[in-house]
Length: 305
Ligand code: CP
Ligand code: NVA
Image 1 (tube, rainbow, N blue to C red):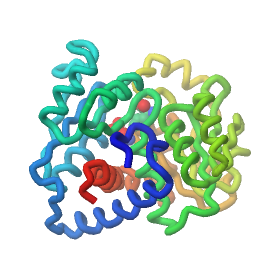
Image 2: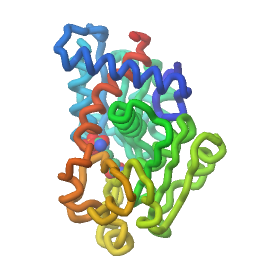
Image 3: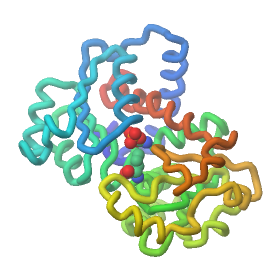
C-alpha cells in the first residue's frame, strides 16, 4: 500500500477493489451503530486552504466514528506556504498527528507536504484533482449496480479537477469515459494520455453533449467555475451555453441514466433544478459515501484493516 493517497493512480486495481469492499463493511458497521473504534487514540490533522462542507464534515465525522479525533485547521490560522513553509508544517504535524489531510489550491503543495511528512497524507482536493470524491462516486455506482462492467460515464462541463480524477480511475478500472466540454475547457492533456495509455478504458473527448451522452449509464457534471476561478463566472456562463444538464439531455441517452454531481451544485447553471431533484439523481448517495470510502482509505493507510 502507498504511504500517501494523492492520486487514484497511487492505488493498484486490487487496492481500489479492497477499498470498495472495506467501505461496504465500514458502512454496514457504522449504519448499524456497531461499536467500532480501530482508530482509538489516533488523531487526524485537517488542513483547509479552500472552503468545504462535505469534505470537512465527512472526514471529521468519519474519523470520530472510528474512535479517533480530528482537528480542523482553518486557512487563517495555519497559513500554509504563507506563515511558514509547507515542508515545516509537514514535519510539525507529523510529530503530533497520525494522519494529515489537506485541501489546497496548488497541487505542488500537496506533493511537498507528502514528501516531508512522516505520516500518511490524503489529498482532499487541489486545483488538479479530487481523488476521494471519485473513489466515493465509483463506489456509489458499484453499490447500486453490483458490478462495474459495461459502464458508460459521460461528464458534461468543465475539464477540471473532477475530470482528472475520473481519468486516473479510468487508468485502473475499465469503463467508457466521455468528456463533453466546450473548446478551451479541456482536461489536462497529459492526464488524458495517461488514461489512454493504460489501455483499460475507452476515453472520448467531445464538444457535442447531445451526441456524447448517447447510451450513458451516468451523466456527471460539476460547477463551471471551480474554487479559484470564480472571477471567470460570467465569461464561463457564456462559453458553456448548451452544456447544461437538462431533462432533455438526460433523455438523449436513450436509456435509464443516473445523474451525478460532486456538489455543491448551482441549480439553473450547470444543471436544472428538475434534474437535481429527479428520482434518477443520486447526488446525496455520493455525498454520504464520501465518509465510508474515506474511512476505508484511512484504515488502509494506517494499517488498521
Ligand atoms: N464535493 C466536495 O468536496 O464538497 P465540499 O467542497 O463541500 O467539501
Ligand atoms: N471543481 C470543484 C469541485 C468542488 C468539490 C471545485 O474545485 O471547486
